[in-house]
Length: 287
Ligand code: Q0Z
Image 1 (tube, rainbow, N blue to C red):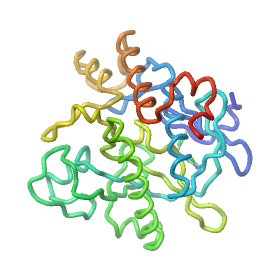
Image 2: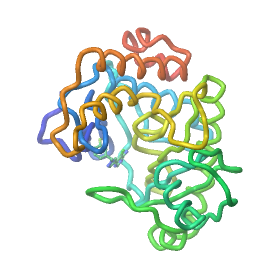
Image 3: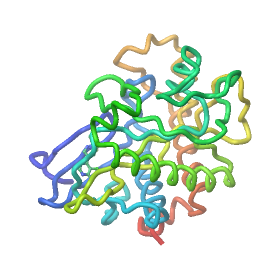
């Protein structure tokens, strides 16, 4: 485990360490959050599932965009990555109308400046995926912004590039996932730059924590959809009548086991790789 003195960032469920001037170590824990609260109970191997999935996508999208992946550590939860100059926007692509996209559509008929056809229902598939940029809020929730605000932050030329690349990445992954029984409703990318201004995909991409994964077989537009990974946890929390204010409840063993199984199922469905093979050798996902 890296020294705490080298910790350069920490999120709700992961940590970022400096390895040297050019490299960082991104470590995904087994912590889980629901309704924005990190629960006291961990989901064994959740961090390994997310790290392996992100590595799988990084290896398969290199021709669409360079990425920060340098190596996966043998622990299966740590990614050595190139240190980037991160762009100050979140790049969200939406193929379906959910979350803040659905909320904005119901009030304005548009999402981040994209005027959408009238009469769409909650969770409807959009005619085309849309790029909906947001600001990075240090605390609380990222705020959707329009194209002009994003252009002020990164420049109009760079914005055009991240939009084109984000949509291409989403189309590739959503198509792959759909044929394997998972809908990627939306997903968030974070990009950075290296020396000569080359655009590089960073952070964790196309995981259930950075995306909405829905089981394709249960897709019923016209209401909210069950989450592929967190639905047992949400249902359990709702059954307790918890007020969704920290601290969250401990999870019983059956909810932990069911949720772990869902993460492993998502990994195996999407990668076609046995999760035990990944645990034995994380590089399996890169080949
Ligand atoms: C990612 C984050 C985490 C807290 C910075 N390759 C990179 N180069 C420079 N910066 C980053 C990356 Cl991935 C970077 N974050 C998000 C991750 C804990 C915040 F593990 N912040």
